[in-house]
Image (cartoon, rainbow, N blue to C red; front, side):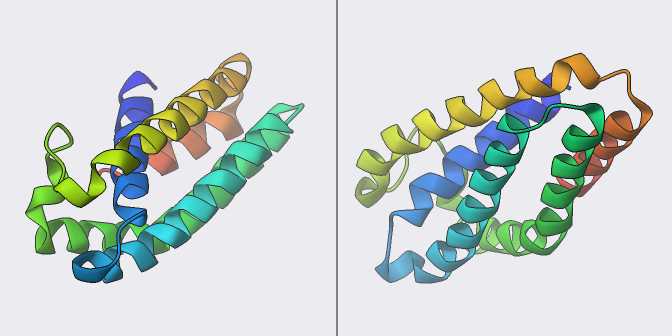
Length: 136
């Protein structure tokens, strides 16, 4: 679970940093705009979840969207290898990094909502599915 959280927060940070950019990174901005929207919906869904069924549904909805977005994000990371260096982002992205980190922390906090339901088979299956998608 911890590795999944770290990976997802890292992806979110990169996505939000890049989403504030245009010009050279216009294609990244488009993909990451969708990623941010989907991630914000996921955070909202988890915040409103009151049962294992709700948590699993939120996780699977997010996984459905990430199946579409993740391959695009991977291609963009290949196209722009400089985006992988979170410590030294392109100059035009430095200010956006602060916002991205704050959003990443918000997403990380939502995982506390999942913890009480981790023994539920549907939640475990949804978590495994998310992990599989984001490690391809």
